[in-house]
Length: 438
Ligand SMILES: *Cc1c(COP(=O)(O)O)cnc(C)c1O
Image (cartoon, rainbow, N blue to C red; front, top):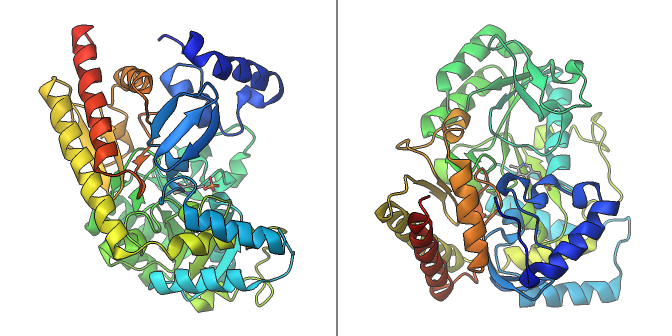
């Protein structure tokens, strides 16, 4: 695979070389290294609307959109203005301010299942807090999770299934003691029977089941409603806490998240990304009797210097207030056009592709399968072909997420014209790849 080279990427290359000398792997989050597509990464100078601009001045249509955190487009006017006003009044107080209350009220209004909220600083902190809370509430140790779901880099959830279903999981990362994942049970996604079996076997030892109700971190894979209904049923019967990790899907797939689509209500919801309006944030929300187990009311400790800070909550409020039903209708329409037309173009050129989409997040899986239901399905994808598409699209000024197993995202600024530009590039790249025998 060719690296990005030549005068057009000179500054990106220079800065990346400099970055590699001082930042581990040249990045602060692994996916940014573009390893999965085998090229050196772009370094970014600025962004506006649907566009992102690298340090060499190349402009791309951004389909990463801050990994979904960005839903209004880069540098949204109202968000930027609200932030400027807040900066005038101070950056962080370490004490409570009104914007935290306002954002929590907006979240509780959007999510049926949320009565009380605790803000944290990232999605990872949200899932770590939710799991501690569930364990503290139930007095139990075991947690159930699903293969291919990502819950941030929390030790207990960085697991893969061990041998022997329903026993224990093994760490997926170095540095995590086996004892730490010994209480984690990892099951195949969308497997209702596996859920029933595990709860039959040890349901009264399970503190919580945590799931992405629409998975976004193995590419987009949707739950069957049967799977979520069974999960809701067995957790209720066994008094285990059901945690929906909606860090990506919250305010993305609809205003009220994936739970609103399925009509299935968890006990606890984890949020992040969009609710910070582009700044770092996370939140845990849910049933009052469970949430009240957190300090200072309850015995489950949790704290944070920057939790609910005025800048993140200001950007969050300014974002949520703009998310009208009309915004979601336009997102849906433009996303559907991209899904349907890009799939048709790719298939016309002989590529086997399955598009999975939930609102404005979607993945084009290069697979021979008819649909994609779990982690082993997504593993059938042709990653080499994805990498060739990625690189050629980048040269055509379209920036996809640099991995087959990520979702792409649209924002309110990705209008018909922008989508048509993407489709033209997909057509050109498909033709080039066929010509070069890919
Ligand atoms: C992004 C993400 C996280 C982690 O959030 P960070 O803010 O990156 O720590 C957790 N769960 C899901 C579903 C996510 O998409």
